[in-house]
Image (cartoon, rainbow, N blue to C red):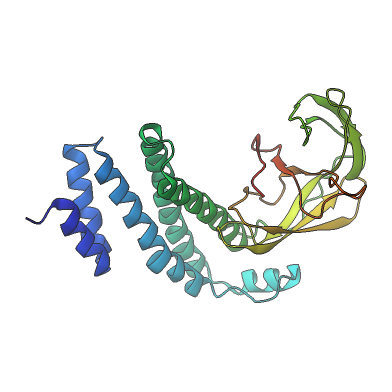
Length: 271
């Protein structure tokens, strides 16, 4: 006997995503809490975005290969208002599906907290959301410079050793060392304003580059190797990148220990 899951699974294999969405939405309307249907909807969203929708947007955008800001400005200027409208409409639909996918995975994980496949799907959706935001910034010219650099930032840093989040400081320069009063360990921290980021999102090993406007003026580049979806950094966000010292040497590790985005109030140690 062919089950509803089998029938929709066949539609997914044949890449008939519109029919698959229609069928699963009817089933979820009748039984909105059934885990098998929630999982299937996540799979449909993931496959549709990966195989059809995201590629469609990338092809339509035809982004420049260069990461140079001037090349992006030239590319953006050449976009017609009609093409921008089409891409923004596609991006809006993409974001809606991603947010639904994240919401569905969170519902499933409340029942199956250790489901690795759903955890992986959630991380992929979050990574694609970062990619979406980068696309949106590029199309809508949000990568351009803004003269909003503060001369000093008063904030609370998070100790990358003991996780004490009440290290009160006045940050007067982007790159500096701080000592945690709880564990008495010293860490290196970069605090600044995001002016560009590459390599965020996804779950494969890759290089990440973040261009930061320094508090004291000028810019600096942070590079590291990432294996996780990371955190969403957008133009104008105030962020902190924390480094700890290695166990066998007095130098700081090449990869960050914590990434923190003060603008959205989130941090992650999954680098």
